[in-house]
Image 1: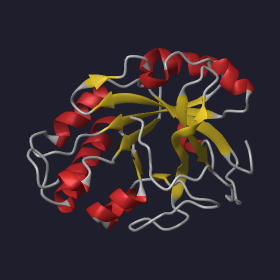
Image 2: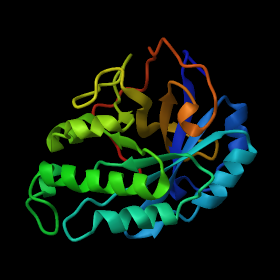
Image 3: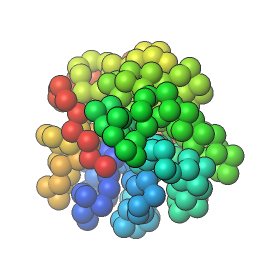
Length: 233
């Protein structure tokens, strides 16, 4: 823990072989692993990363990068993701940041943010139905505002990507203090012990990972400043 917040990373096979025991020694508290990418593939390192991170004493979550596009059924994608997830992990997240609004008028993407809203909410509802879990929603302010995410998303906890100082930029439908995880950098300056660039995160508590922790009152930190998110999926 640093500055009253728990320290972590989100990691995929892009980061290669990671020494999780070294991360724990260095003060890392949690890691969130990529599980599945759209309808395309499961991350090849996900399962062994989960085992190694738990063995090192780290709290563990997973995320699914969703493909909210017209030709793909959200219920089918939710089932694909959950059925290929590690059931011992209780923190399940969706990575909602794609497609960019610049592509919305091009096939096979939706024409507007409302359709991305509807698709994503159907996915989330189905994921909860089959898993019993309320997914944590990861996104960043520009995408949230572009899609005009509806108030229904407030039913889901927020993992916000915001690379500004002191406090994250949280936008509607969430309120400023609604976030539970904050991605503080997009892999531009932070590196793992193996030299791989990596996204950095902080969490108010480890409760969402199934670990009992004391909620944090003060949440002021100074993350690395980056005006444009560099997305590592």
